[in-house]
Amino acid sequence: MFKANSLLFTTISIILVLVHLYIGHYFAPNGIDKLPVTMIIITILIFQFTKFKILVKLGVTLSLFLLLDIGLKLYAGGTHDYEGLDWMNLFYFIGIVICSPIIFYKVFKSNELINTTKILTVVIFIVFLYFQNYLFGNLGVGKSYPMN
Image 1 (tube, rainbow, N blue to C red):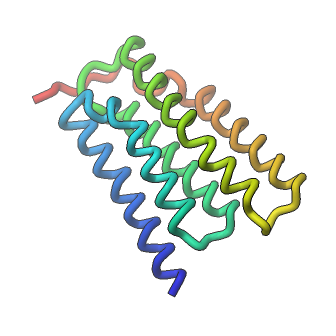
Image 2 (image 1 turned 120 degrees about the horizontal axis):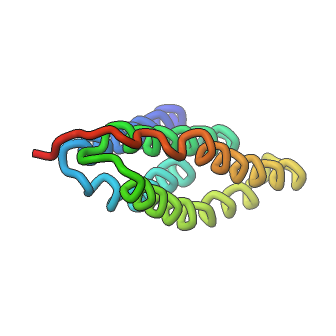
Image 3 (image 1 turned 90 degrees about the vertical axis):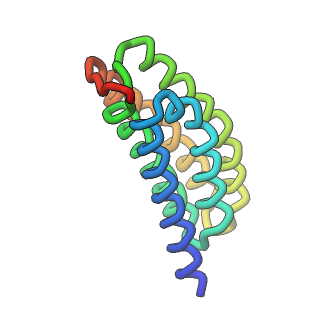
């Protein structure tokens, strides 16, 4: 029973990401403006309603965040310049700042990890976000998709 619910909420989260990318492509700049809201909904759906282990929840959430980031930087409507990239990074950072306490609370509340692993999980989360920004920070600059 719990696997079906976990897969259902994970599927809903994936569909939410795809709908968000669709909105970002055809109704720019709503994809960037609504990014923190989408990130919060994904975090709550994955961490509150699924029965996966905490590390799997973190991996799924970070994968969906990465998909949102890369998808918007590559396919959002309009002209992709450095000013738009700064706005994208600002809204992404706002989403991370709001989602981090939820994630950290769930990690430290979890009984399946020892304290060292909990701290290591938080460090891995922060390092992942750093390398995501380092590797994909300027992704999509120079692309142009006309807005209808």
